[in-house]
Amino acid sequence: MVLWSFFKMRVSAVSMSKHFGMLGKMYGEHRFALAPNEQKAFKGFLDQAFVRFSNHTFGISGYTLYLKLLVLIFFMIGRRRETTKLEGRTQQTTLMTSKIPIDVPKLS
Image (tube, rainbow, N blue to C red):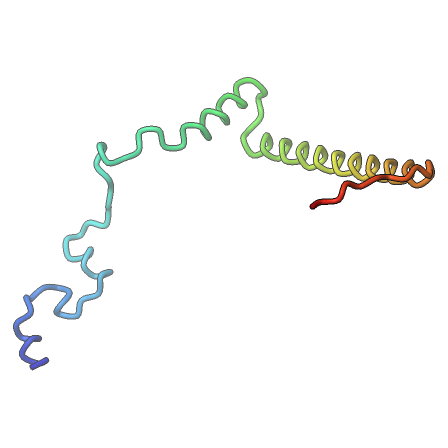
């Protein structure tokens, strides 16, 4: 039964054990492209617009701008973490040294 279904199969390059890599070589063309109506109209618009704007205004390329922004954000986050740690420590020490009882409301 299985052998009979093999003979009923249509003859094609795939059924004759050709690999998919060999199929493109049969016609001599290896180029695949989308039609103009299938392409995205604004592909990479925001990325390219930001890089072009930075190039014209600051005169620097994209990767250096991104690197400077990342370093700036890194130091801003580090500074914020330091200030929150210091604020938390000063609040704890003032509460401990003032010896004022703190009333915590009970949840019921």
